[in-house]
Image 1 (cartoon, rainbow, N blue to C red):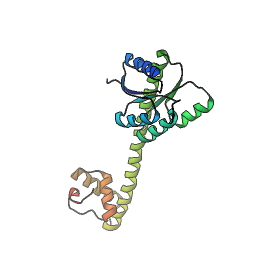
Image 2 (image 1 turned 180 degrees about the horizontal axis):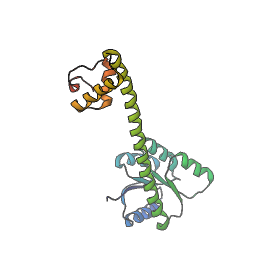
Image 3 (image 1 turned 120 degrees about the horizontal axis):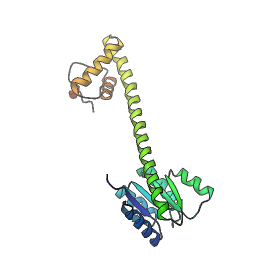
Image 4 (image 1 turned 90 degrees about the horizontal axis):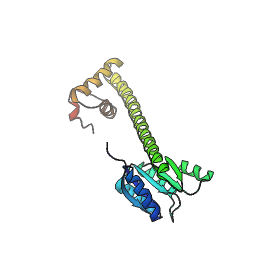
Length: 202
């Protein structure tokens, strides 16, 4: 199994080095370091790490704002480090969709379990998003097929079952998807005897 790829972001070089050493000793691959939120965004785009360990308190752009941008742009999970534990900060971190946070000072006993939990949570979120996208695709395909069936029923004066069989047969014969055939039927209002591959589906 490949090592998780992690980026460390902190404006304090000594703390950043300590965190990097802890992660490397625990078997992780530290692929990048940054000392500002702006640089964190640039390096996140370049390296696409599995997780970013990022300090909240930084000059110009803080860690929470950088986390929001990274989440929206690249969907990379962020584990925040902070010297503050106020309720407002926790709420703000939740709104940034971070996968966790640690209060300084950071020890290896605190950091490594938090990283493992963050990585595990990130994998579950990715799997859930994948399932949602698959479900959305199936629902969209079903709607298109239903519409295409209605068109074929109207044009060729055939029952619903035969319209569905006609679409499915084209899919199997020409090795194309139900969605592509349905979209063609909706656009051209026909499905003749020519091969689907010659009908400019895409």
